[in-house]
Length: 565
Image (cartoon, rainbow, N blue to C red; front, side, top):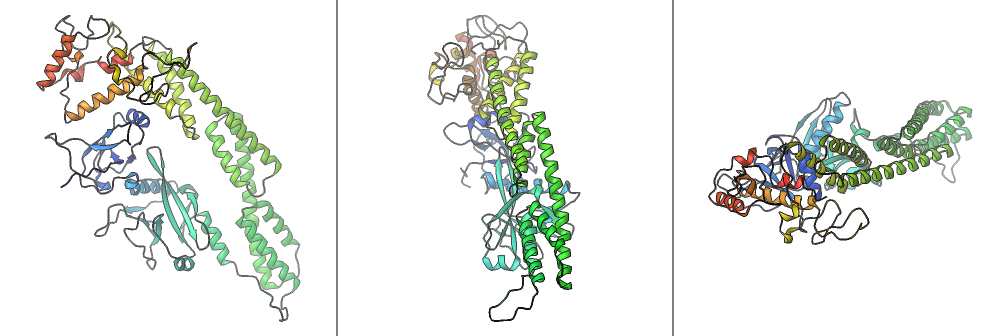
């Protein structure tokens, strides 16, 4: 079998038969935070992804997208996998099952799921969701054609075509799409009808009725198709309807328009005019009364909902809760888009101004705290440093919830959290190592993009504070070099087939000053050259490196405790 060189973007967590999918970030700076978050997790080429069930690792690159890769086989040769789907969408069927399970559980419902794949169809092309009285068949791609005469209700992926005759006959069809959000995928349900654009909704806005899956758009379509057409007058023919009946027909059409545009004020106005109308024929009066009763209940419910929504918005503004303000502002704009009052307009504008001010203040606070951390001594109190990083973490999480791009700040925070860990594990009494740039060749100083000052590949770092702010640094930031060293150590581990046989200087006893494994040499800033040579000899001899697992200070930890910053 030839080796498939397509890049793997999805995996499952924990085991080969896991149903918990995730997507790998494409950018190197995002992958650093991803690795830190999943430090104790394992990644697998899942069986439910059509994979081989093998263990995966993450590959970090700066000149191309990052991706998963199989660990080498026991013989050290590249692993061969016959998995067909490897793109970001290759785990969509698992995301659909997970989202649908949570959605139904919140409504007190249960469903059975089956990943049907007829002969020649890839796994995940079709998902069958068996509800209590209905079965949904989700077509994520064109592998299986929908059966329109089947009792099952089709839900079509965005690439699955449907002809106009089917739309006219069925009134509408449901569609599904998945949008990437970080390392996950979010499910969206759409409703497509003839001569109407597809309307998209979140799962939380959808319901399960006797007809099956229902969205707000379905309710409007069904109501529009179920309302009888008003009587038309033909020129040259005698009119058979009274003026009162014509007025009743007109009011019902206006009531339908008010419901379609979701305007409770217009609905209430039309309902008031209906109550003032008299002299309508008995048959039409019955229909008019039913429409009035239904519309009155809806209008009252919408008015109360809008009052509650605006009250919650005022409370969120008063409490300065950023994520709640953003969510409630969106809901308020949607609920009042047709007949927004002046008072509602002012409340929404004030909330938007408050939200912008809070986000700006939070961003400034994060940047100030990160600046303070950059001046924090490497030998400082770990508990104090931990409290600072926790405060920044809370602010960064809050910014992420409102969609504020904080990738750069999150990367810096991850590096400082690693530095805290290193301060907690350094042996007591161990002397601080020399600057990290003395351990890395000058030609490798600008290989990685700097997570602190943002200097790109090939560019020098800049000074972040003080009178020389913005000027080029003579040496790079230590965290920039730490990224490079971490990638080198990872590649050495992968090259060894998962068994680390690479020796570093601090893994061996120094033949000059007799310092044991993990202890720093008496030489200024770096180990003695003979210690390097001894470590290289052990590596060449493939001598088992059991000390590497137990040693505490290594080059990485030397970087974390460096006083470069």
